[in-house]
Image 1 (cartoon, rainbow, N blue to C red):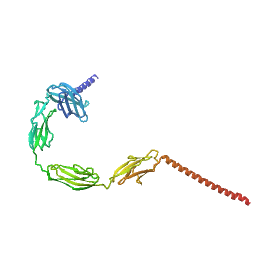
Image 2: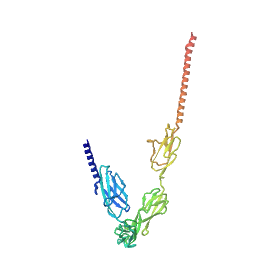
Image 3: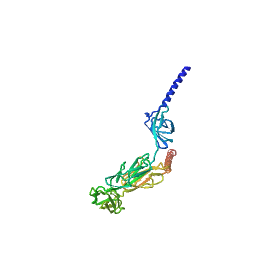
Length: 428
């Protein structure tokens, strides 16, 4: 028995030893880790990486000898395997610092990976200087700007170039400026890290030969529209067709009659006659169209009036008047109020009965004002009284008929008695 126990303990000891050895294996390039990066910003060691399959992750910052300096809290996304850690630790300038990451799947498997980083003394950029404050260049020619970082031994000497108006002047990341069109643009150079900038004003002169405008023509010199229409566009043709500046300004003599957009779209408002003009920005050439607006034969909108009364409710709002476009439709619902449920309402539109479809009353193709009325709505108590009153009348009538029948029967019986009994005795 004792022998068996010793063997069992020996086997357990071997398994325990194997577990410890497996957990202590450190791989600098473990296939379970898809990424691992570490950097130091002067205060924090920033760690990012990815190890999928819902691993529990721990992070240690070590010196180049592998001695742990600090450990951090890990934020782990189980859905993606991404993890981050931000560990506050003071580090002296040196090389070979390590971030050791260990991930385990609830004790079933443990993997590790190591990322290395260096700590250098960061020298901030104090100033960015340009060799030109302003520069004149001609159209389609280039100029060179040179940026100087102060101090020259700053850790990051990278700069970024930009132009306030690339249509006038562009700049590449080497500081080469190209004139694109006459005008002024501001070239800015900025330190890639930090907020230090410097600027240079670029004046571009010259340019391609321009073609002057010599005239303007409109697609219509006269036009007639109906009030309410807004789908007519005047088109301005510039002469020559290859003129450089084809910008046109539209005007209308009375905007209460009609309006016109910057694209020549006319909206007729009311009856009247106005002048529509188009003038070129280059040369001030003008073309005119006479616009006549006639009153619309169709008012366009019609009234639909919904009634209000006791015993029923109409939706939309009862007792209101709605405007409907010519040819349009209108729908509403009617519901009986409590204590009016025995009624059989009759809905009429301009006197004609309108029947519902699936509980909805609809009027289509509206070309005139519509007045809606509701008839036949009475309280349940009133209908009950009428019903009982009718029953009482019928009962009285029945009693009267029975009484008449009894009188007739009595008269007949008396007549028979008289004939056969009394009169018969007299004959004897």
